[in-house]
Picture 1 (cartoon, rainbow, N blue to C red):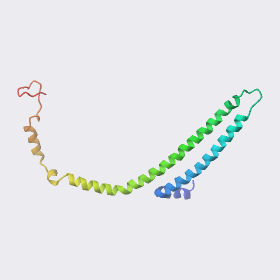
Picture 2: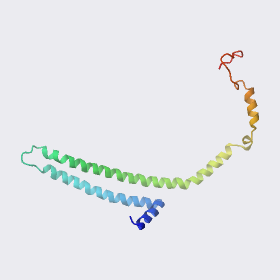
Picture 3: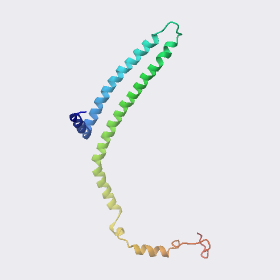
Picture 4: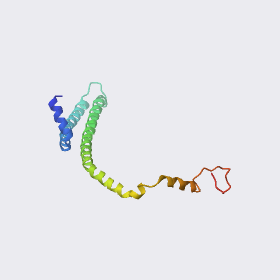
Length: 154
């Protein structure tokens, strides 16, 4: 590839609308090729299946044609998958751009919600008070199965 072509593709990659348009152009070309291959497949099938050699049974021409028919069918299936992948890629590119554009708003909303959930009074609790409260608690200390005097189990 030339430097001009690479720089043009770099610009296409940075612009979501240009990216989608470029993939659409590629898809149009591939769909045109697919139509040509479908016609070629049909004509090849008709020709190969009608080519009989002396001594053939009725199915010999069909058996000789099957490998090529199968190959053309695989090519068309893969071409269909490529065009579907182009559509999916264009959709995902647009979705990515929309998500990036919406991200600052989402982060701002998240920060506002986070500020509402944690009041400043709870953020400055004394950790020493929580330690003494847990020591007074009935379930705070370790117990043993032999310490059943208060009818507590381990």
